Length: 129
Image (cartoon, rainbow, N blue to C red):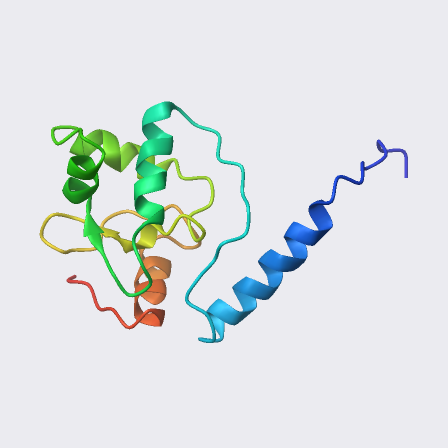
C-alpha cells in the first residue's frame, strides 16, 4: 500500500486484552481496566493520573482531593488541567473526578459531559447537575 512496514512488537496482545476488558466493562461483567498504556506527560500530570487510577469503580473524588493526595493542596486548577490532558480518559478514570460540590465538570472523552454522566451511571453513580 505504499506505507511503512508495521513492526511486530507484541502490541496485538495488548490490543486484544484491551478489547476484551472494554467489552466486559461495558457489559457490566468487569470493574477493572488494567491493560498497559504508556502515559506521556509532565511529572505533575503523571502524578495526577496515577492518583486518579487509584479511584475504584463506583467511587469518586474531587479535584481538591486529588490535589491533597499528591501533596499539592493549592494546585486544584492545575489538577483540572492535568485531568483534561489525560490521553486515555476511560483507562485513567477521570470520569470519577468531580467538582468540589460533587457536580460534574468537564470531560474530554466521547461527547463530553453526557459521556461522563453515562459512565458514572454505568458504575451506579449519580452526580449533581
